Image (tube, rainbow, N blue to C red; front, side, top):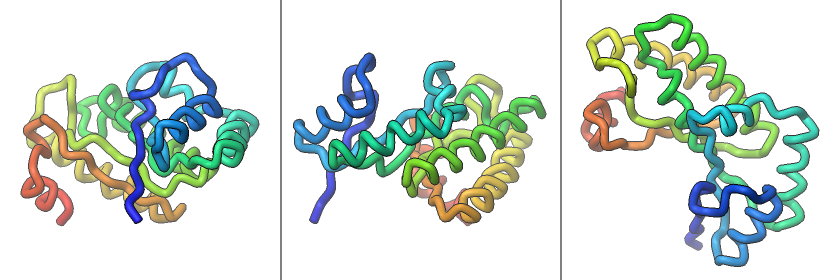
Length: 169
C-alpha cells in the first residue's frame, strides 16, 4: 500500500494541530510532515512542554492521522558547517532537541537539508565541520532509534544522488 503525505506548510498556518491533521485526512492524505524551519515560531517547537507535546499526540489519536516525519530546516540559520563555533554548538543542541521531540511525538524520521552552510561562504572547512557534526547527529539519533535523512537541495553541496552518496560514505 502506498502512503501519501503532505508537508505542513502546504496547509493553512493559523490552525491547531487537530484541525491541521483533520484537514489533511479529509484531503485524502495518510500523514503530515512537520516543519521546524529557521523562524523563531517554528524553532520554538523544540522547546515545547510535555503538555504541548501531549496535545499534538492527542490530536494524532483523535484525527487518526500521524506525523511521520519532521523537516528540520532550522539548520539553515544554525548550520552544522558554520565557521562560528557557537552556531555549530546551537546546531547540535537543536538536533538533540529535535530528536527528543520526535521521540515524544512518535516520529521516526527527521529530514535534514543537504547543505553545509547556507548564508555563509562554502569552504573545505565548512564541509569538514558539516561532516563531523553530521556524524555526531547520526549517533545522537541512533541512541533514540530515530532515523535521519538528507534532502537533496538546489545547493551545490548536495544537489545530486552522486553527491549524497559521497557524503553517505
